[in-house]
Length: 130
Length: 130
Image 1 (tube, rainbow over the protein chains, first blue to last red):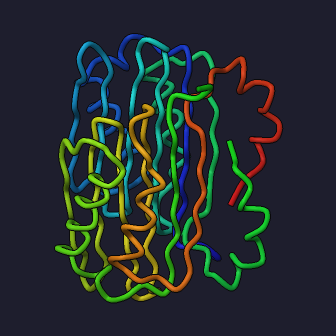
Image 2 (image 1 turned 60 degrees about the vertical axis):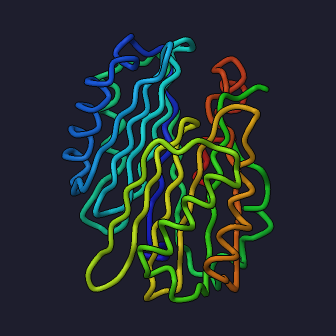
Image 3 (image 1 turned 90 degrees about the vertical axis):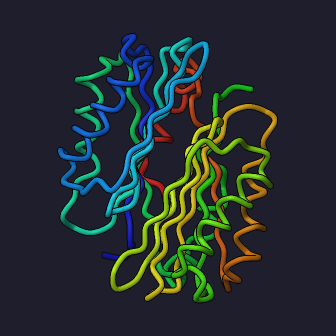
């Protein structure tokens, strides 16, 4: 493995109203942590007024976060993991089950590439992505 | 603004030993939140055995997370913000002050681009980045 971690960013659009329910966000996080094979250390969920929910889980393998904009039907997810015993991409199906998005986009970035590897790629990575 | 949020990923290498001190990680997070102009809702810090620290802050504007691998001198940071009142890139200087890295790499990704914008770019974004 040439990187210490994997960081998966997931954009979910046209989601159902459950993205505005803190108990659904918490349950999706807990199921997501199980499905990716990670270990939950702590979870914190906050409901904003008038709408929007944020849920952030600290994992033994790094973190998992969900942030919703119900007025746009949008949920932003990211999961950062280290180690070979977890599959962060398994979060995608869990979020589809809970929030029924019409459109999903997934990106995976390697984190913690050693500088001797990274320096060869600095120029291409310096471009603004996304 | 064509995106709802900004997600800044920061790779720090050749860091000082403070990346293995939970009180330093917590202090850096709290200072970072202030410097970027965000509002802290909750912070959780965990020290791993034999080494490594994870600190995750939930913000009114999304989240800020630090994960360290002292055995590699490596710290992974990410900060996700929404709104025009915050400057997530201000975190970079805070982390430099605390952890004195020899090599830093910063990427910024737009989050929550509306699908009609995003769909035009699906092909380029589908490439694995990083």
